[in-house]
Length: 137
Image (tube, rainbow, N blue to C red; front, top):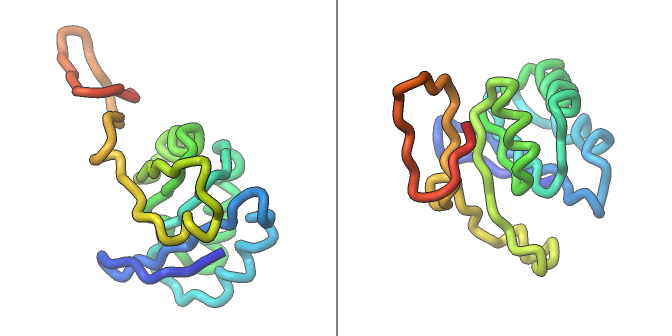
């Protein structure tokens, strides 16, 4: 698990380990103890986390007086679960053929750079929503 200082509003980034390297449930409490209370971004990397997992992650963060501001992941199901819980999300795309050391130096793409549009809200009859790519409603 890596800790990086965020650029905006002093949001610290916590990066969960890749799922083949370590279990996030065991690693997370150790890194949370080292943080001062404040806002965090959680990079879930290649973990497929359901709502129950994300609630557990949020509970761990709250016990450490930390507030999750953004959930970031390369797994779309994790992003959907986080959005369903009301979290701000950020999807990243990582080539599967890179080694974990190369992933750490890769610059992630956000959903603004991709052809996937996330729309949180209601689309009523007669309303239009258009996108150059896919839409997740």
